[in-house]
Length: 156
Image (cartoon, rainbow, N blue to C red; front, side, top):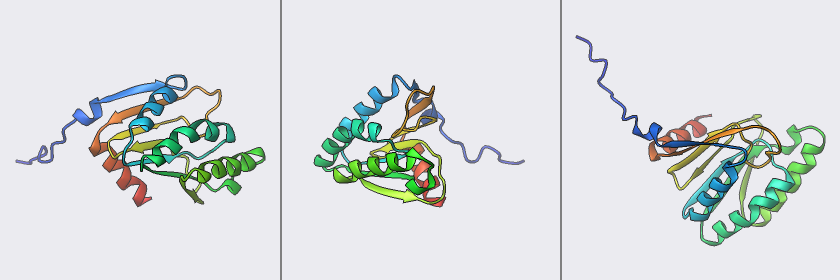
């Protein structure tokens, strides 16, 4: 007999999640930033000056509390037109408050955030540039899901 159920996975981490849209996301995400005490990782392919200026005060307070804040984004020179200067200006604002920014040449398009290794945000919303589009973001509270995402990011 085959033991097909040998590696059972507890589905409860997947069940502890909520969905947010472009209107409700930033309020909830801001709450998570305010309670962060260890680290915040954000992946957003685009950065605009407007969004950088909006989130900078929250991230600055987190950094003052000792939180390591990191952002992975596309190389600004991989954008077209005004997006190049928007990205460069937004990156400058965030670096000036102590955010560690990695620019990537792989044309990544992931939109996610992880906070303290147990809160995972993922979806279609560009966290650092969203403006006027209809979006969805899922907030999952799960160390296992964050660990899975960390492994995925490191492997690619």
